[in-house]
Amino acid sequence: MSSYFNFSTSWGFIITTPEIRHMDNEELAIQTLEAEVLTRVPQLCSHEFPTTPAFKRWRKFWIMKIFLLRLRSEDRDWPGIINWFAERGITTGNDALKSLWTRGSNEVLAMERAARQYQETQLLEDGTLSFEPNWDRIAMLMRDHGCTENWTPEKVKYAWHYGASALFPHISLQCIVIGGSEYVLEPPYST
Image 1 (cartoon, rainbow, N blue to C red):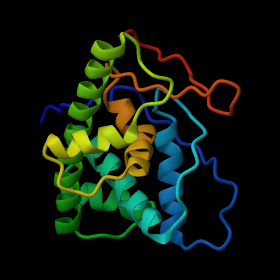
Image 2: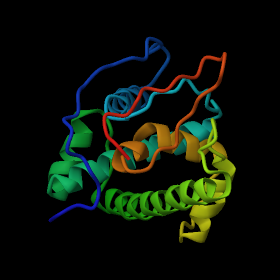
Image 3: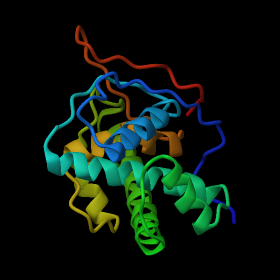
């Protein structure tokens, strides 16, 4: 099975979250996977994301979707994927994972198309890319490209910084805040 997504770089394994007390095993597993995703992204920014229970639940499923895309691109079978998640403290069934994989594939493709359209439109209008992508505009474009989930600007920004940007190195949505805490690592690729 060939994959549309680019997972050619090896995935390192690090834990960067120091506050692991007061968490259940599944939350710790998701934070560990989230840290692993960060080893693959071409750009690291210090964004603040919502800490509401609803966003945390959505975040859990986003991280699982990114890993499902990666594992399926490696031609892993479903029992192997279930075991892979179980070894990391996340228990779920075959049907649930297949559903997450299908939704994740559709969402990531819609995000890629929306980000590309946003980038092309901005270059045509301004001749340059802005310092901060308009995440609200990208969320609206995702709906135009077939995404049925409710994508907020915060979800789009999180998803881009936690997995999606690594899948599409040909699209550059960079965050720069002059005099602030945001920074950009130059990507190791040319556009």
